Length: 134
Image (spheres, rainbow, N blue to C red):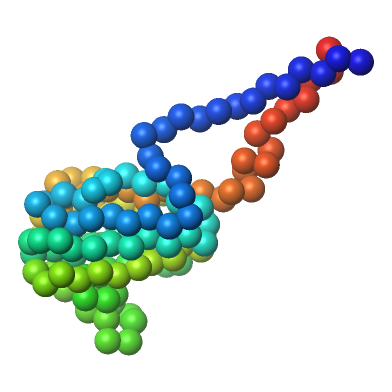
C-alpha cells in the first residue's frame, strides 16, 4: 500500500506568533497587518504622535475595541486619542478578520492610518494534511 501526502501551505506577509506587538508612530502601525491565533494577545504601543486604536465598524462585540490610555469599558480605561507613551494589550477569543484604525489619521474600512488583525483558529492546521491512497 502506497500513501502520498499532500501538504497545503499558505504563505503570507503576515506574522504568526503567540503574542504580537504593534508600534504606533509617525502616522502608521508597524506591522500594519498581523495574524494571531484565538487566545493570543496583541499589544499596541504609542511611540510618538496623537493617536488611538479603534476596531472597524461591524467588528463583533467579542473583538470590538477603542483604546489608547487603556480601553473604553475597562476600569480607568480611556480610548480617546492621546500623545503620551501609552500601551495596552488585547486578547482575542473568537476567529475574525478585524480591521482597525487611528481615529485621528484613519477611518473604518482600511483608510489612512489603519491595519488588520486576522484572528485564526489553530485547529484548522491540524487538518491540513490529506492522505491519498495510491
